Length: 189
Image (spheres, one colour):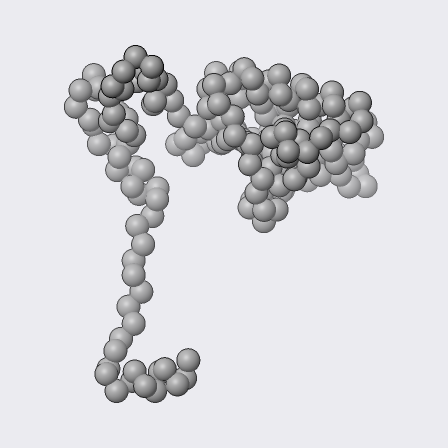
């Protein structure tokens, strides 16, 4: 780097960082801009379906909610956190305490099932589930096989709830991305 600094120093070059356009700024602009032809409704995409096989307008405009789940076991007990986030960023938070002896798998599935039930009560059609627990994510996505009657029961229950939504995506995230609500989960345990 020093060599390049010396070489380029004679040209009196100055580094100016490129300003980034934040994603939420574009989202806000699109959401606040009324579109003609949609009866005054705001939309992310102004596309009219061209044939009858396409989804109708209401399905295209259906918002995606995000469900963050996490569980913890410590010497004081077991707990889980469920954070349901609306497309606008509003959060419904729930901390759950389990008084029975449980494994990490049990707690993660309990958090998932509780979150799915909450989302169904809110009549949410599209949901993104985010968890840092790889085993549960891959079992729900049918990448890993469930072993043991207890885990198979949890998996069947989760999948039956998932089928009640229009679409659900279950994604694994890094543990650090789940840390913003760790206090809620620890409070539950």
